[in-house]
Image (tube, rainbow, N blue to C red):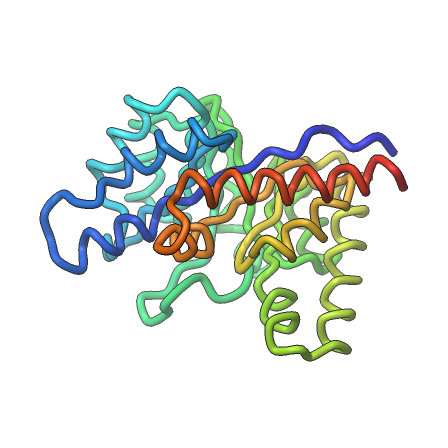
Length: 253
């Protein structure tokens, strides 16, 4: 199948994490977002958590007002966050699981288990003209539940695969990859737009970019970490190049 251009969404959460470690206004995640866009990002992702541990309400408002690319607002499916999303009207919302005790998002949203909670949230956001995606694992039941809920897109959680790659657990990495690949194929066949993210670096992003069903990758922590050494603009350019190399493989297959 023909592979469309792969969009790169840059997550600026951990620019805010650095800012909040000391307080004040520096470094500014909105400035980082503008720099990422100038270096080749197709959109910006930001997760407003219940405890406001990194991104804050003012960051979301400023991102919506000041960037000239789509804003992907990651949020838990709570009344508070729905109200903020409906007020802000970002281009997209990605519904994610959230626990106060976690360092970062642990696994995908259980769309099957939480279908009753998710259904009115998806409906309200779609009614407001906001594209909705569900951050889920690639298991068939989760993909099918996204369809039942009426979400037009999913974001496949790639964290377990990336962890297995990083720790050289080859058999586990292979199994996780097959799950991702099959999930992407199923989702596309059911009419869903397929995104992916979590834990991706240059190498793993290039691999997953070769899946023609995937049209968007959202990447944050790795880029912010590498920016300490290379600068944010360079890391975004390096990532854009990795995605383009992977896409060439998709078009050749």
